[in-house]
Every structure is written in C-alpha cells, then in structure tokens.
Image (cartoon, rainbow, N blue to C red; front, side, top):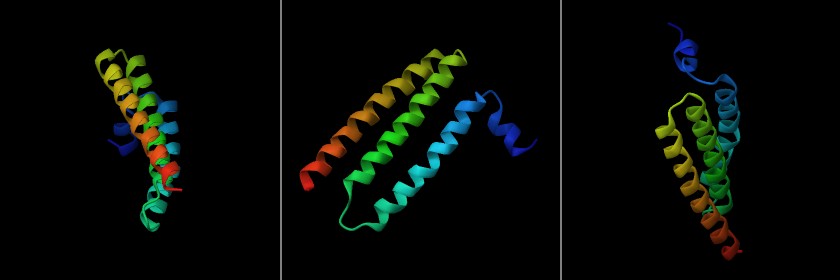
Length: 96
C-alpha cells in the first residue's frame, strides 16, 4: 500500500489539498517567528488564523463524512483558536 493511498483513504481530496497548501505559509510564519527577536506576536497571530482555517476545513470534511461528533469538536476547537489568535493580534498592537 502506497503512502498516498493510506493518506487519502476516506478523505475529501480537495480539502486535503487545500490543507497542504495552507501548511506552506504556516511553516514560513513559524520560521519567521523563530528568527525574530524579541517575539513578534503578529506572526503568531497569523499562525493561529491559518491553523483555525485548517481546523475549520477539517470540521467540514468530518461533517461531509457523516462524523458529526468530530465535526462539532473541530468547530469548537476552531472557535478557541480564533479567540487566541485575536488576543495575540491585540497583544501585537499593544507592543507597538
């Protein structure tokens, strides 16, 4: 069994591809946040937003696959991550 068969099995392919596309800018922001000193909360906020979008897409995928419990948990996790990202952007605006 190939790795792609194992990874794409029982998944909605366009959502998985979109999540892979979102990983690239998230990794760039992670690298930028590690390379800046002092801590730049602006990058951390963007990391949270991209992570929230990915979790939201995962919730839509679970809802489409008729796994309602997982879908609701991903939607709630998305809300928590968005709240943390908003707080991070607020801290970034105070630091300026």
